[in-house]
Image 1 (tube, helix red, strand yellow):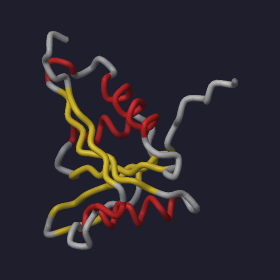
Image 2 (tube, one colour):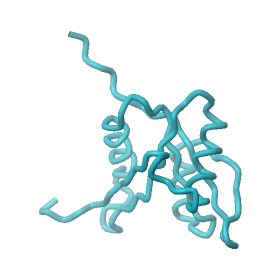
Image 3 (cartoon, helix red, strand yellow):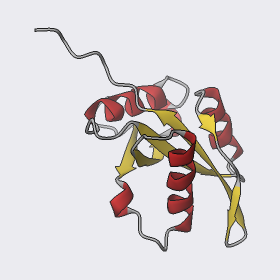
Image 4 (cartoon, one colour):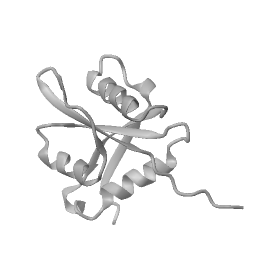
Length: 124
């Protein structure tokens, strides 16, 4: 829209999450347990400019990202700081699987996982 950035979504392979990132590693561990046999990648952070919030961009951006992720990944996980009520509400509204809350350095986090949805491949 006129060259203005509406938002962004980032993704990380498990190999890009260092062992020092306890929030990321715990989120990936929990998602792998919740979706056995699935290879998990980390999704996030996600940010949408306030001006563009409430227009369905979150779902569109994550759908586009999921379509671009290699087929070797079947599950995505995102974590939310429990103090971020707005983000918790959005993730719960999206219907993701809410995993177990955990604590890192005095802050509480909760991971949300979901199976990657890819568009049907066109038949030749």
